[in-house]
Image (cartoon, rainbow, N blue to C red; front, side, top):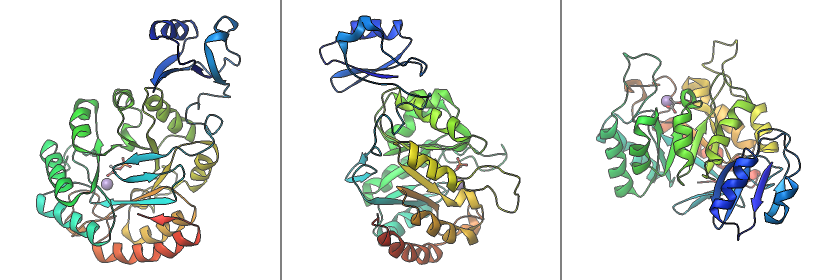
Amino acid sequence: MIIHLKKNIKEEEAKKIAKLTESIIFKKNNFFILITPSKLKIPPVEFKNMIADFFPMENDMQLSSKKYSKKTREINFNNISIGGNSSNTLLITGPCSVESIDQISKSAEFIKELNLTTLRAGCYKPRTSPYSFQGLGLEGLKMLSEIRKKHNLNIISEVRDASHVDEVIEHVDIIQIGAKAMYDHGILRKCGKQNKPVLLKRGFGSNLKEFVQAAEFILSGGNENVMLCERGIRTFETYTRFTLDLCGVSYIKEYTNLPIILDTSHAMGYSYGVPDLTRACVAMGIDGLLIESHPNPKAAKSDASQQLDFKEFKKMFNSLKPIAKAIGKNII
Ligand code: PEP
Ligand code: MN
């Protein structure tokens, strides 16, 4: 159950109630919010006078539930908003990894040419093998900061483990938590303690309940700005890299208040399928897309087979606009 305490309740008192109800507590503007285990359906009578509002919940999908907030959360960064009242579909692109200042500058110029707003590239790469390119780390983040300043773009980059969360937060506008880190409670809790938007990817072996509950770790830390990212799950199919769970996307839209971003690049794993899949995703009415693009995909140091070159990306982008328009969305 989610409990909103009255505005006049002091921290000490609020913490006492939290302890007695085994709740997580955080402060929103000028009042405290408690989240009790979902089995509690009625607030204890002794606290009745201190409670402004309460929301009984069926399960531990609480802060993310449409039962708590009917509207999709609005996420704002710089001059952009997604979710809420906005009709925007945020088209996020960039290479899988920052490789050099020349490469990332070309990507930034390409994004500007298309009048898009948001560049994503990884500096701490969670690779399957320790012998593959691991990313440029802090050096890469500094390149992204330079690009942000020069081109006035929003920057997204990934946190691989809790040891460099602060570094990433300092250099980005949106923090990405990757599929392999979805269960990293060090990262989740740290991201819950600050306000920058978080793009949380679904672990490829996780069901929807586990995915949404990972988001609850961030939300219940007090960070309201969480976006979910479906990037494909592992099935018995091996001809494509993963299987994009569009049924799951419908579930998320119906039952959660979190914006949903679709990553067709990692789901498909091969560039040939990305434009078709992306068109299908836009038609579903989603809040954003994450598509990898690279000035020279063949030479990419990670995820080479799935990244679109600029010509392919532009062609796909032009084909998305009428689809978005037909369902009342605007690609930014
Ligand atoms: C990535 O976004 O480049 C990435 C590594 O993706 P995922 O975490 O979805 O595997
Ligand atoms: Mn990648």
